[in-house]
Image 1 (cartoon, rainbow, N blue to C red):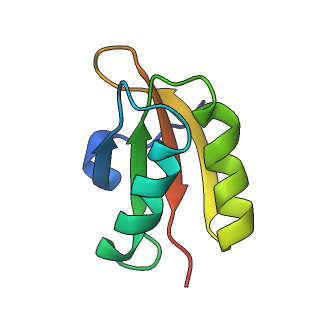
Image 2 (cartoon, one colour):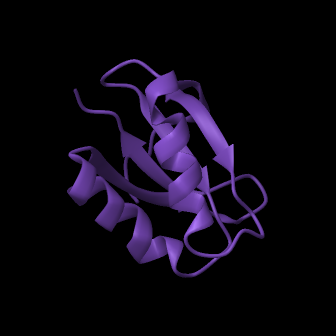
Image 3 (tube, rainbow, N blue to C red):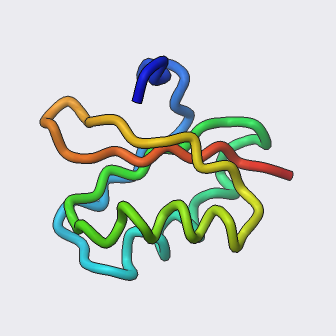
Length: 84
């Protein structure tokens, strides 16, 4: 993702490495309320299903899917902006 936010812009990063579908989006749903509206959350997930699950969750729940980048270890990191 070009123009990816740096780590200082991410209000909360969820470590979902090793969790299988649907656990990463369950954790996202439980924790999204911990950040202010407009803030970024990052979901680090190694399950390939997260690549489609996180954007789908955002569409269903009314949050903005910002895109994908990589965590420091190279694991996929999915970025979500909390909406009202």
